[in-house]
Image (cartoon, rainbow, N blue to C red; front, side, top):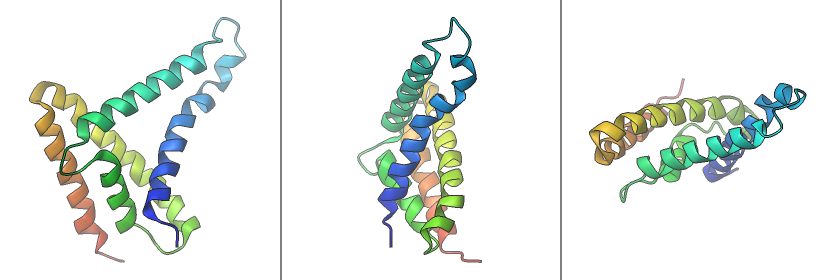
Length: 129
């Protein structure tokens, strides 16, 4: 059985590689040679912002992703990857929105929302269709 941490690492890797695929059409255009590099740097900075702003002493960002991965595993690694990676993308974007709102409402707000999001997935994870 593949551990939940593997899926978290895979998600972060896929997330960091996305700018390279998005920038392929722009690489052919003269004048955009640094587009890929700029997109990658922006992606890493946004990921770091979300990671730091959602992490707390009670629950780190990566531990929350690991918990969500753990409760959503099907027992078949290939099947799990098909639906878990999109789930982690949705959770990431919810965390990003909460972090942006947290810039106004404070880091404690964002930390609390992250704990609530992970708890919601834990509660729903027990429901097997």
